[in-house]
Length: 210
Ligand SMILES: O=P(O)(O)OC[C@H]1O[C@H](OP(=O)(O)OP(=O)(O)O)[C@H](O)[C@@H]1O
Ligand SMILES: O=c1cc[nH]c(=O)[nH]1
Ligand SMILES: [Mg+2]
Image (cartoon, rainbow, N blue to C red; front, top):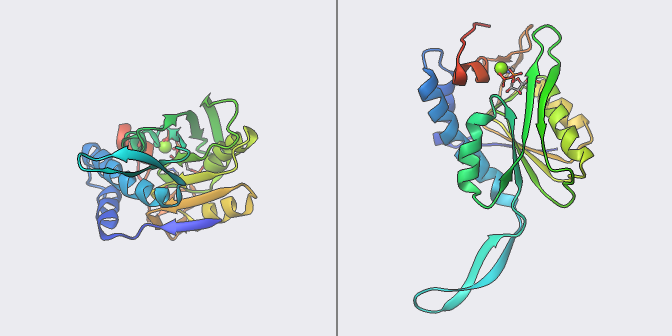
């Protein structure tokens, strides 16, 4: 699996804001929005483009457009905070949704929502979830996409644990991963260390310690 870590200074300052315990939910959401713009920008570097004729006020020339804009799929809840930034960069895209909640004891994802086109043959998909921990949630989501015929899945996240990266790499699915950091690992509750806590709670309410 191709893995890209976005280590740009401006990405790292946003990530630092997200990590800090004292960062309130407003600043957390704003930082996630800005960081998503940078991560998706990097992810889009390999998108296929096509030329088409345009006219400037001065002369005819060639313009560039995306040959095959991706379907954007945020994983609810936490991925919702990345959706607006991704759609801002890719206004020609459409959006599907997958809702998953990790069981606190087993750490397995429980699916509660699925709104995806039935056929994804020939369509790239950009999956948004800030956190790749054990990898169970993203694996579940990416299997749903592969089952619909998708052969080009680009995952955009903020933090990844090596355990989750390895699990996705071993899955045999057609994945690429773009992240702002690969952290040290997981703690006994399967939270990323040093991480940033629960990305859903930090955006939408509830603040636990890990
Ligand atoms: O790699 P994993 O071990 O599966 O963990 C990562 C998942 O956990 C978080 O979601 P969570 O289940 O907390 O739901 P939420 O977005 O509603 O908070 C996160 O947004 C991922 O989807
Ligand atoms: O560290 C983690 C792990 C899973 N989900 C989160 O939101 N944070
Ligand atoms: Mg959560």
